[in-house]
Image (tube, rainbow, N blue to C red; front, side):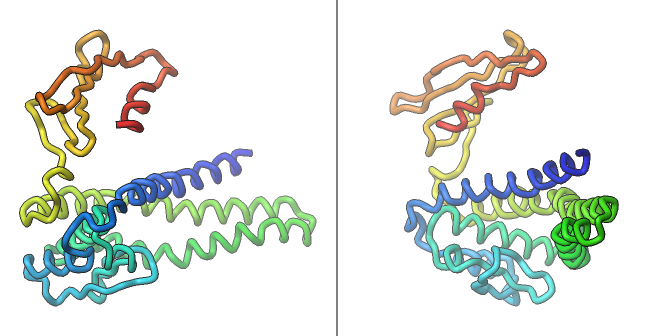
Length: 257
């Protein structure tokens, strides 16, 4: 049972974040012609602006990525040729990795080594998981099956661990490199950029703002609406702070901005 729980937890940690990212990317693929430049043109423009003309841009059948070994930003056909918000932001994110590489960003180098090291181990782990039930049946030894299952879970778990260890690299590429680049060079439309009204964070495309107040009434989230007349206070949402009660209203309002 503990192995099954561990396996389910690892599976959730591996799959759920990816599903969430895919849903966000799918959401912002429309409108498909939102920007004048394609993702490939955006990547090329940013790379040239940074003086990284030696970094090539290519279409790939795999996932979007930057290859530090051959100095290439590779985008799927949808993102390379697309003009959506998703296409240009993914292109800028991969350029962020190219900039990390050019500046000698240590965590990126570590990630590159880890990915090449973990890849074969993950394949071994997947093989052990598939063979474990058959080994148990053929040898009639439940212990052999459990050993195979445990080995498979542990080796697959190394992949999850690598993802967590390299998370700072992804965050840096997006928020420290790509976002400032897109702002500086006017890549994004103004209504796609978050802005601030005092202490209130706003998203213009959603016409909704949220401000937190942790000191009042045990925790309150204020919801504001952006209208033609300015900023209006729509609601003060009480946050549940007892054990076992999540801030369910936050989920509701963020899901339907």
